[in-house]
Image (cartoon, rainbow, N blue to C red; front, side):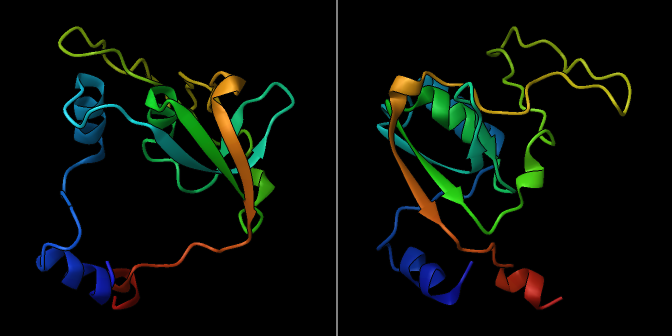
Length: 141
């Protein structure tokens, strides 16, 4: 996190919570944060069948896309198209009846290689060419 953002958080100018990604999705599913209006999903492409192929920034993208009313897809041209086919996107069931992740071997796949959502939810597609940047913490190692 950069110095400017950290200062704004510490001064109370930016609402911020530091929690694990899995907790964020559980809170969104439970309605703790209210309705999710818009999600911005970074991608390398959109497949012929409308699937969003995530970039290196996957995280909770699939869950955000499912939960949001509208989705903006950000196609990042600086990310390699080779990401297509790499991801294994799996949405777990809801607690407390969640099943174990059905992976028994290193080569097992349980999900999909793309984020599948109703194309009617896509509000916009924007193009960018902004490379990922390492955080200051990573740069200081």
